[in-house]
Image 1 (cartoon, rainbow, N blue to C red):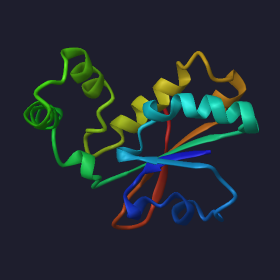
Image 2 (cartoon, rainbow, N blue to C red; image 1 turned 90 degrees about the vertical axis):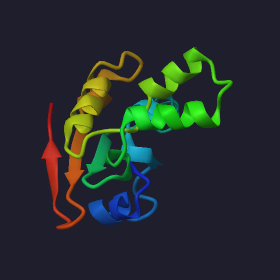
Image 3 (cartoon, rainbow, N blue to C red; image 1 turned 45 degrees about the horizontal axis):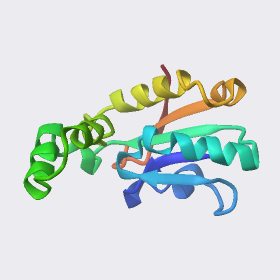
Length: 141
């Protein structure tokens, strides 16, 4: 199973050379792991997953603004949002620097996840794509 950004330049099937039915792919803003953890647990129940690959890339849209900008925008558009809701948005924000820092954080999040099988967590791979060159490098904790 694979987690990656919605950006068309980071299409996991193309980047990893996979056919459509070879891999379950979750795509979200910035390719972050936290929003899909419970889905991974559910899928593991159904399919007994054997690997998790997280694919991040440079020049991601989520690197072009800050958490403060995102939160100010939400406050302006949704003045009735509670502080608790805003804290949840901030905690799960896809905003990240334009390097592999967030990928390392996601790898750490997975390594500390108590509700996924240890043998599945032992088979996690972090990959970082340079969208300009097409080169992919492995990132480890």
